[in-house]
Length: 123
Image (tube, rainbow, N blue to C red; front, side, top):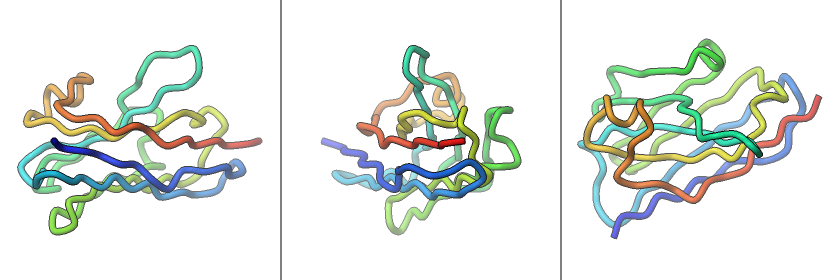
């Protein structure tokens, strides 16, 4: 019943910025932890960033810390990922997910998943 739809991906050059959005429909996810994951060709899905329902606590993978910022707007039922100083190794399909537990979400478990949006960073 719940759907997550990512948008904002594209082709950029190294050093550029992108902002990804993930809009939820079907029900409010204001009480859910939400996060972003990515998967490059031939690799497994990697946790990128997470945020608790209130937005007061965030989590980041070491590889993106200081460059990416996760935020949410519960009134819009939307989570964002601001990506700055992009590197070619950031190239991947980016997925958003939601779970009732932030601890489980950080370990890759989500009740709901989006279909992903492609981010390609050229050198």
